[in-house]
Length: 284
Ligand SMILES: Cc1cc2nc3c(=O)[nH]c(=O)nc-3n(C[C@H](O)[C@H](O)[C@H](O)COP(=O)(O)O)c2cc1C
Image (cartoon, rainbow, N blue to C red):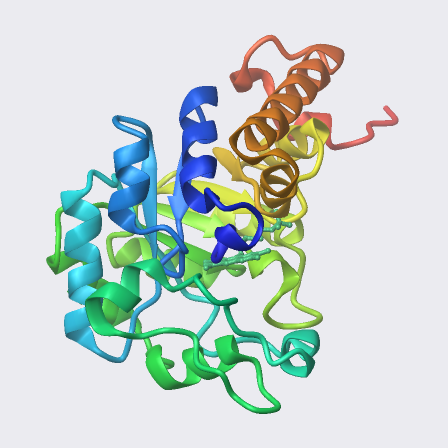
């Protein structure tokens, strides 16, 4: 998630430290308010991936990938559900812009790019329209993989056929996601899309899911539907806003404890025991 210094002054560094301390992974946004290198320096050897938005400026995109690789991030997570930003009316009404002192940490120092102030418009919407490539194709995935040895993860898939295309292009993992419902109103819920994607991918790649994971029981259900792992969005920001690194760690531990209890009460002693039989009511 972008702009984490809006929630806490340590922003993405606090989130990454909490993830490292609790044995969770962390995906750093292209639009973070702490840089690729600052986050890496705070969390040696922890599992970090870098989320990429492909900019119109190919050189800039290449530089982001090279920096992520050099700083020890272990995968590139390409978000494909945001060729343009969705209609976020409150951001538009508020003329969203980063407050004084906060910047696009990965971009401002390298290229001078920042969220513009646009009258009557969200600065983030304007940034997407002005700077990001709205016409990414499967061919771009091949180009992306030529930039570094990092494995590619594609985030924002909701259909089996798209997942199959991504896998054909060499993607190692799919993130089933509707961007937390923040892009297209009426988009299918990611948990509903998950079974089709799992079936289509047919063990050729890992399948992860995000969106609405709020309790341990949600993790159990996602795994029962075939996910290899889940990702957590907004609850992390709530913990961060409340108590920084400790708040994020607390959220992760709560989810883990609830998941553990849900497994025990479902008769599952290992992750392998969690399967779709838990989801069906059998009357015979
Ligand atoms: C404040 C905020 C910022 C986000 N920024 C990004 C981003 O920069 N890149 C991205 O791929 N997804 C972004 N997302 C989407 C999340 O990565 C994730 O898909 C979604 O929040 C998961 O749903 P959940 O919040 O219900 O757990 C953002 C979400 C929020 C709430």
